[in-house]
Image: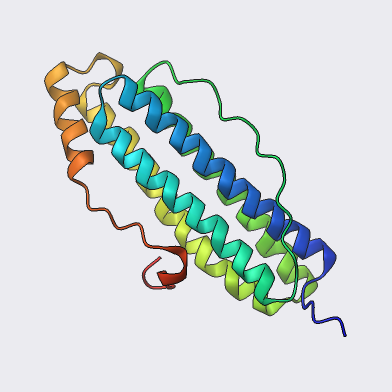
Amino acid sequence: MNTNRLSKTIEKALSDQMNKEIHASHVFLSYGIWADDKGYQGIANFLYRHSQEERNHSIKFMEYVLNRGGKPKVSAIPAPPADPDSLTACFDGVFKHEVDNTTAIYKIVDLALKEKDWATWNFMQWFVQEQIEEETLAASLIDKLKIAGGDRATDESLFTLDKALQEAPNDVLLAQDATGTNP
């Protein structure tokens, strides 16, 4: 008996998103390595934690597909982009990546609504809320860097920003421990 409760279209969209989340993890890992190499250990640590969070999102998609009787497909992950030229380019890249991810999330929500797959629609609401938080966080990085002086920031301002991100709480949970109220 076939126990798959997902249409082929939704199963593929969820698998694609699982892989997109892994790609995001690699992008943020790459940016973290770049920041670490430039001496921004606090910013690097922040990006490493964000990389882990994106991986956890991928696992949430994997678990959901499996729990609905489907089989997620792992695909080749594109290489991360080239190293950014500056912190501005790095933070702009983080924001752009989150906006792209939000767009992909919305497409799955639309597909679930179209197919009247209420379980998937409900599952995706966690990600809709999460993307609001992710975009807000990315925008705040851009704002903080602008306040510090952007690409013309003093070493002291960059040191302070780096230290603030180093001291930011590590609230990245394992995927299986996250909830709708505590993603």
